[in-house]
Length: 154
Image (cartoon, rainbow, N blue to C red):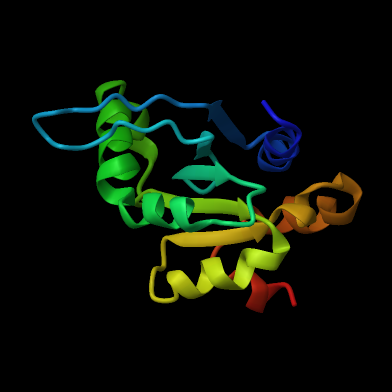
């Protein structure tokens, strides 16, 4: 796990109410034409009963990430939900899966602009999760970010 992913893992699990599976392999299902991916994390937010797919990138060029997100239903959401459904884990999760991306601050607006109408996608600047003392209270009190980050944290 690289440093950025390690920082994000700490951020996600702060407070002990989010379980994460790092490098969660989603096998390709040829019959359904879905899966074939390995997101950086799949998180189970136990308090909010949410399944969250998480990608972390420090790349300046986020085009590949944006393409993955466009395919989120078949790449991540459907196969993950089906896999968890087989283990009965999803029985208590009453919300649809969502995506949480961690990107560089200088590409945050580009990422958000690409998905303005998508209510299941949130991006957070990597720089904002690098130092626990700067986000501790906000993270504990507010949970994992939702919506357009740059408008809510300006």
